[in-house]
Image (cartoon, rainbow, N blue to C red; front, side, top):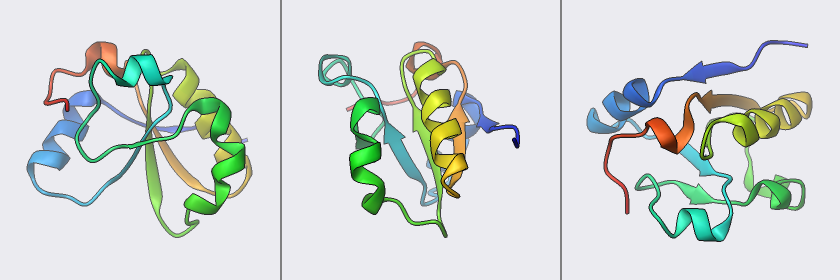
Length: 101
């Protein structure tokens, strides 16, 4: 099995500031997302990922986000096994210092 690619919160913030078009997916629960989400991120709870596979495009890379990066890593492993391009934001929202909405 291939290792999951990662991105740090700092790297992600630089890409967003530079105006890069990124596919961000926040896999936290509703009450966690209510406390703030990275602008532009799509909210799909971890448990809802299998039912939402039609949202994902195998030609795009998706960056997955959760609170600490454990759940997003599990989602990355699952989707990578399905043939999707994924990246995990390590440290999760606990290490995000950028803007939230």
